[in-house]
Length: 116
Image 1 (spheres, rainbow, N blue to C red):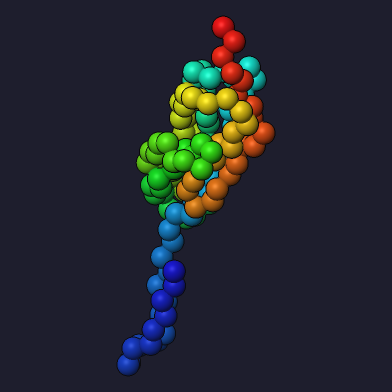
Image 2 (spheres, rainbow, N blue to C red):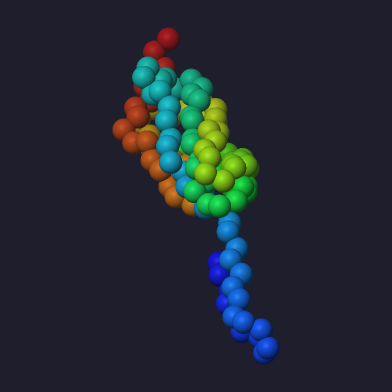
């Protein structure tokens, strides 16, 4: 954000405000051998490409349904990884997403029926 003004008797001056700029840069989990009832850790990496530290809400979405969210604090120019644990309750293909300022997807994961 930038403001510019001129005041009578003074030169023109500008005020620049830097702020955080968050982006979900990676989402990852191991879907190998996942069965109904298994709990999987989903790693979501959030990067702050802005000039100041800040907080953003990052959430986990499974098959279009928001299941949990947390607030993450990220320093300027840094990344933080948030770990969500999720238990799958249905068999079949799933889409796991995260939200912040950008949605990232992990498609093609297949949850197997319980065969124990």
